[in-house]
Image (cartoon, rainbow, N blue to C red; front, side):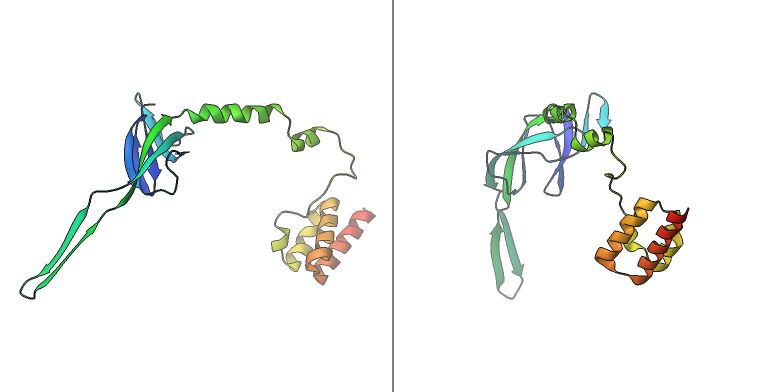
Length: 189
C-alpha cells in the first residue's frame, strides 16, 4: 500500500509514509499523533474504496502561512487600503499507513478469547420462569386500536410484558383492557 487519500479539516490529501504536509490549524497539540479518516488506499495496482486500514499522523508544529497582501484602490477618489493575512496552519507527518490495524486486531483478540457474558448466558440452560420477556417491537408507537388488533398474534410472555409496561408507563385504559382480555383468552386455551 503505497499511498492513501485522507480527509483532514474538510479537505482531502493524497499521502505516503514519511511525507510532511501543511493542513488547516488543528486542535491537536504538537508532538501528538492522531488517525485521520481514510477514504481510499491504493498502490501496486490495487485500490480499496472502503479501507479498513488506518493512517497514523503526527503533528509536527503549528505555523503561520505566507503573508498575503491585499490592496484596495478606487481611482480619482483618494481611497487606498492595504491589509495582510497569514493563515494558521498545522504541519503534520504521516508516520504509517495500515500499521495500526495489526495493533487493533491484537487488541481485539483477547476479547474474542474471553466469552462475553451475554454469550455465556445464551449457552447456559435457563429455566422458563427466569427468561425476561419484552413488549413487541415498536410497542410504544402503537395506538390502542393497533394493539387490540395485533394482540391476538402475540405470545403470552410478550402480552404480560406489554401489560406491565402499560401499567407502569402509559396507563392507557383501552390498551390495558385489550391486553387483559387477550391474557384471559390465552389462559382458556
